Amino acid sequence: MWLRARDVIAGEDAVKVGGIKYLPRLDSQSDNEYLGYKSRACFFNATSRTRDGFLGLLFRRDPEVKLPDRHAGVGGALRVFTDDVDLMGTSLFTFCKGVTGEVLSVGRSGTLIDWQNDGEQRAYVVRYAAEDILNWQAARINGRNVVTMVCLRELAERPDDADPFAVKITETVRVLKLEVLPDGGTRYVVEVWQRLPSGNRGGIGGSLWSGFFGQKSSQPKTEWTLVETRVPLRLGKPLPLIPFVFHGPRNALPDVDKMPLADIIYVNLDHYRLDADYKHGLHFTALPTAWVSGFDKTSELRIGSSTAWVAEAPGAVAGFLEFKGHGLSTFENAQNRDERLMAVLGSRMLEDTKRVGETADAIELRQAGENSILMTLALSLSDSISQVLRWVYWWNSTEQYPEDISENLVLLQINTDFTAKGLTSLELTAIVSAWQAGAISQATMFDLFRKGEVLPTGRTDAEEKNLIGKIGHENPTGVFPKAGTTPAATTPPAKTPAATNN
Image 1: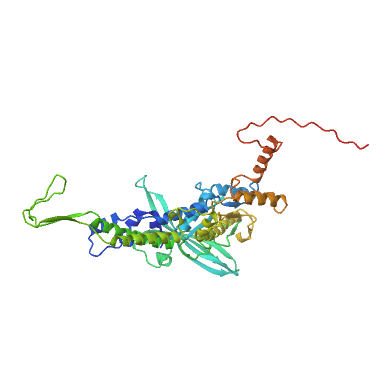
Image 2: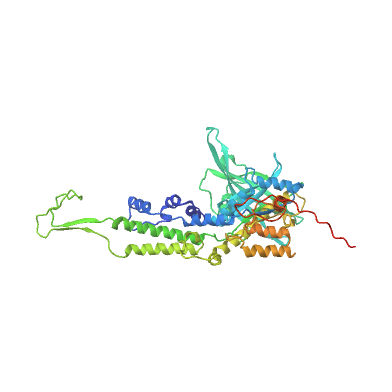
C-alpha cells in the first residue's frame, strides 16, 4: 500500500514503470502491443494534486509555537533547536511540513530524538519514513503503556577506497530497546546491526534478519552483525523511555493507521485504466479507413486530392469505414464518474467551477467533509510534534519524565482554519465592542484579529500597540482626511480660562 501510494503521488512515470501492477495486459497482447497500449494512456494525477492542496491548507498559516523565554537556559536551547532541528539546517517549520507531507502520503512517519555528545552538545531529531520503521513492540510497564522496541532501517554512506568519487551504501538496522531492570526501573539501549560479509562476523550471526522481517536474507554471503551497543545517558543516568515518536493521521500510537488518501488512490488508478481502454479504442476507431469493392486486387490505390480511383468493373464502389455507436462514450461516462468520486472523497479542487454564485456559508458547508479530515490530521500531528518538542525540552531540563512537561511550557499547534473567509465588518465591530465592554482583553482581541487575517501573523501585540500609538501621535485630532485631499495644518486650540466661583 505504501509503495502504491508513493508511485501514484510520484506521477505518470512511476505508475507506468509499475507496468502490469497498475495496468493489466489485454488478452493476447504482445510486448510491443502492450507498450503502445500503456504509452497511449494518460495518468491524471488527482492524488498528488489533492495532497498538495491539503498541505497548502494546513500551512496556510504558520504553526503556533509556545516555547519558554529565549533568555532562559532551556528556552535558549529550544530556540537554537527550532532554527536547526536535525543538524542539517532544517527549521522547525520545514520539519513540520515534511512530517505532515509524509502522513498525508502514506499515513505514517516517525521521529527519533537524540543527543549529540560531540561538538555542539545539543538535542536533534531524525525523521524516518514509514517503510524504514521495520518493527515495533509495546507493553504495559509500571502502570502505563510504553514502546519497548523499535527497529529502524538506515542506509549508511561510506567512501569507496577504490574510487574517491563513489560511495558504498551499507544497510544498517538500528534497534531501540527498553530493558526492565531488577529494581523495576527501565533502561534505554541502542543496538546497531549491519549486513557484513560472513568473514567479518563480530556478533551473534545472521538469524536476526528473520526476526526483523519474518524471512531469511537472500544474500547467503552476508550476515547481520552487531557492530555497536550503547546506553545513552542524561544527567549521568540511562533514559527511562525510548525517545521515539510515531506520527499518524488520527493519533500518535505505534499501530499502522489507514492512509488519508487511500480511497482517492484506488479511484485514481481505476481512472488510469479506463483512460488506457478509451485511448486504445480511439486508436483503432478515430481515423477513417478507406475500403473498395470491384477494383483490381493487384493495383495500388493512393489517397490524395491528386489521385483518382478508376474501376472497369460495373458496380464498383468505394468508401470510408467510420465508427458509429456509443461504445467509447461508455468509457467517457465512467471516467467522469471517477472524477466525481475523487472530488467527493476529498479533492474538491478537482471540481468544475460553478457558474452560479455561492455564498461563503454554502462553500464552507460544501467543504465540511474534507475539512473534518484535515482537522483530525492537524490535531493528531500537533500532538505528536508537541511530544517531540517536549522530548527536546526534557533533554535540556531536570524533569524525571517527558510527560512531566506541561502544555504551558511547550506546545505546537498546526493551523485548523481552512477557510479563506476573513472577519466581516459586523464581526469586527462586535469584537471591538466586547473589548470596550471589558468582556475580553486586548490581547484576546488582537489574537482574534490575527486569526481573522486582519493582523499579519508575524506582528506581535506590542508592535501593534506601538503602531497604534504612532498613528495617535501623528494625528492628534483623530479625524482622518478624505482620500485625495491634503490635511490642513492644525493649530492648538486657544486656552479658555477656567470659571471661578465668586
